[in-house]
Amino acid sequence: MSARHFLSLMDFTPDELASVIRRGVELKHLRDQSVLFEPLKGRVLGMIFEKSSTRTRLSFEAGMIQLGGQAIFLSPRDTQLGRGEPIGDCAIVMSRMLDAVMIRTFAHGTLTEFAANSRVPVINGLSDDLHPCQLLADMQTFLEHRGSIQGKTVAWVGDGNNMCNTYIEAAIQFGFHLRIACPQGYEPSARFLEMAGNRVTVLRDPYEAVAGAHLVSTDVWTSMGQEEETAQRLARFAPYQVNRALLDHAAGDVLFMHCLPAHRGEEISHDLLDDPRSVAWDQAENRLHAQKALLERLVAPGYRPA
Ligand code: CP
Ligand code: NVA
Image (cartoon, rainbow, N blue to C red; front, side, top):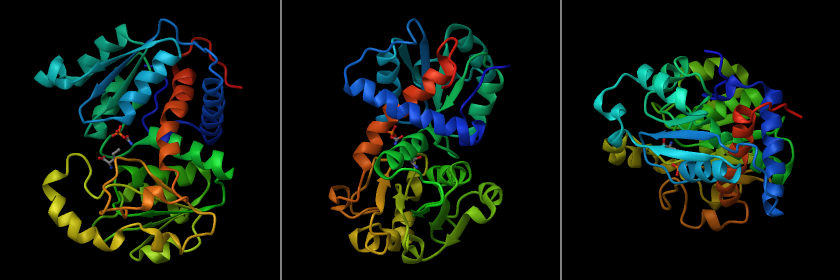
């Protein structure tokens, strides 16, 4: 199948990623000026959600509507996907009716199998391994607040989860150094670490990781699908809470990001989202703008990057 997919940041070149993010900034300005821009008139995005979502669903749905198209929410509960229809068969059928498909799922293999059988672009809306759309928003947010992230130091504090794996890919694609502070046994996947080489350092001490960092990011300690491990994780991750005292060890102009939803009192202190160094609300809004840029690139007929 010849369609272009976005399952990982590695599916785009660094130049393509930079262009999507710059376009996200432009589309945000157009919307702020109430300019109607509808290059996706008549186009339809299917959205398969095997896990819960607020931001991803809303940003893709609102984004498609704002671009002149429409989005259809598909839950496995109400489709034949939930009754065992093979994923490849679903992909063949759905991609004959839709212009793009966004999937939030558990196993990353579900995405790759769907994409292998799809005539239209497939977008990763989060898997157990990766959350690339979130990183588009994070990188747009850094650009807007601080300019280029190339050569900067980023600290990831907490679980070596799907977000952490994606930060590793971002370190490669956007050219920053990533320090990860996580408890033993909760490191990111070895294959991502191997791919990143010396762009990434894994540490145990969160203070060492954030020292002088320009961006500090974290995420929940228990991701979707790991609920049974909650008590054990709460105990293991307790020394890894990001709070104002920890951020004070970072660079003077550090930004704090959290993909949300946040658990105040766990991975962040109660007051952290109110700290002036936090840009989490801008980050959440940028899901909309960055993904509109992604949709335009993947779906708009005759799209030519600037
Ligand atoms: N950050 C993020 O993907 O949020 P949702 O789970 O609400 O989509
Ligand atoms: N790591 C979290 C991200 C949620 C947006 C999860 O997978 O649940």
